[in-house]
Length: 256
Ligand SMILES: [Mg+2]
Image 1 (spheres, rainbow, N blue to C red):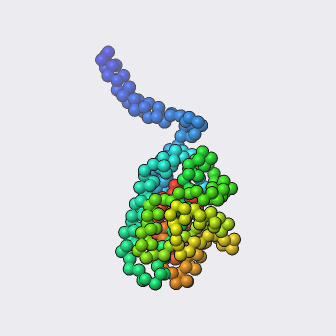
Image 2: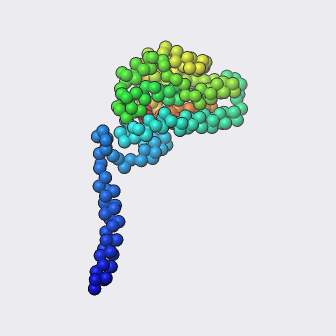
Image 3: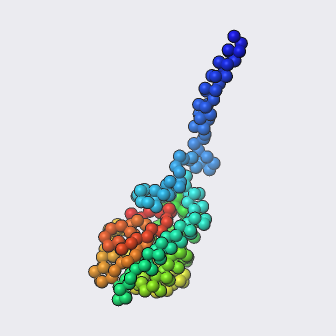
């Protein structure tokens, strides 16, 4: 009788051990240090959703992923991802037969495609996009003309010029910042271009509409958009997107 009781108790204990263990896991605190909420969000899955445009119209990096995005942007992975995009773009570009009439163009977006705003985004007041966008502060940063080049993009830019492409910079930056933008581009090594298109007061609509209308003007002017590179899907969607598009990583902000 005694041994049967023991066996029964062991059986019961085994049966309840797993649920208790799981319960302890479930009972882990939902708020961590600094009041940041623990989240079931997988930040790598979140970033993948961003890069594939499965996730749209997001306004800021989730709090739970602020550190993740910071480590990604400042670490080797971001730079290697940018280099990989540039390498694929070059492989494609060098296989093209250019017409030689000076009308083969490569369209580059500027922010987070050719120039990096990482020094600004890494500040505590911005936290890699986990703090809501502050247009006034960002404009002050743009006016400084201090953004470094994205190394892979700068190398690609130089190689494309050697291949005979004309470069078009198409940016959502306002015309008012034309001077600092030109200064910034030249300072870091983007020294020549066919056109630098900024957003004027008469340019209306969302980013897709604005960029589509400017690309249409290029095509109407006889240019052939052989390649188009940007960090936002709104750089690459819409009409006349180009023969091929290349998406540069950017998990810090979304422009629709
Ligand atoms: Mg951009």
